Amino acid sequence: MNTSNLSNRNQYVLVTGATSGFGYEFAKLFAKDGYNLILVARNETRLQQITDELKQQYDVEVTPLPKNLFDKNAAREIYNKTKEMGITVNILINDAGQGEWGKFTESDIQRQLDIIQLNITSLVELTYCFLKDMVARDEGKILQLGSEVSKSPTPLMAVYAATKSFVLSFSEALMNELKNTKVTVTVLMPGASDTDFFHKAGAEKTVIYREKELSTPEDVVLDGYEALMKGENRIIAGGKAKMNVMMSNVMPDKAGAANLRKKMEASDKNPREGRKQSGHQASRIERESINEQTKKNSGDYEKNENEKNESIAAQK
Image (cartoon, rainbow, N blue to C red; front, top):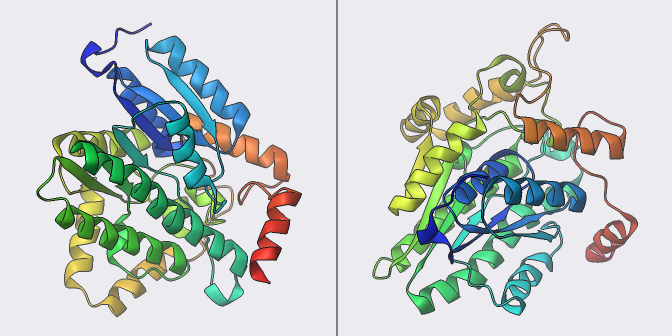
C-alpha cells in the first residue's frame, strides 16, 4: 500500500466516468495524492473492482456511486447522495462524455439527444449543484473535459464537437463570474486519445483512429491535473493538440471543418493493419464488458427496458 499525502486526508474528489479512460487516470492520481474519492460510472461491477483496487493500493476512502448520467435525474441524485452522506466535495471532475460518428441526418436522433444530455445537461447540473456550495465556502475546484474540437466544427462528429464548444464557452463564462473568489474552473482540452471513445462512438474505423498517433490517457490527465491544482483556466494537452487549436484559431471555420472531415472519414487502410483496440488497460476492459453485453465490437452499452421506455416517453 502506498503512503498517501496526509494533508489531503479530509478532502473529497468526485470523478465521473471513473471506470475507464481519463476518469480512471484522474482517480488514480488523486488517490496517490491522498484525496478521498467518490467514483461515478454506470457499470456497478466494474466500479466496485476499481474501488477495491484503489483502496488496496492507496490508504484513502473510496465510495462507488453507480449512476448513469444519460439519465436526466442522475446529476441531482448524485448531489443529493453526497449531502445525505455528509460529504463536502472539494474537487469535481466532470469527465463523463461521449460522441457519435457519422452524418447527422443518418444517425439515431435519440442517441444524439442522449449525448447532449450527457455532455451538456448533466455536466451543467453537476456544476451548478456543487459550484453553489463551493462559492458559499469560497473554496473548490472544477475540471471540465473539453476537447481540441471545442474550437472547430467537426463533420461526422457534429453534435459531439458542438457539445464541447458549449463546455468551453460555459466554463469560460464561469471563470469570469468567479474571478473574485477562491473557486477555480479549469477546462482540459485533449486531442484524439487512446481511450474507448472511438469504439463507443462507432468511429473505430476512421483515419484518425486507425492511422494517427493518439495521446495516452496518462499524459493527458497529468497535464489536466497539474493545471487544475494550479488554478489555471485552460490546458491544451499535448503538442499536437496545441498545434491543432492554434490552426483552428487562425483558419476560417470552413477550412477547419474540411481538414477535420479528412481525419474523420473511414480509413481505406487494410483492415488487418492499423489500430484495432485501445492500448489503455482500463479502457480495454470496459470495451470487453460492452462487447460482452452487446455482442458487438462497436458502440455503447445497450439501454435496458426501463431506459428505452423513458426515451420513448420523453419523445411524446
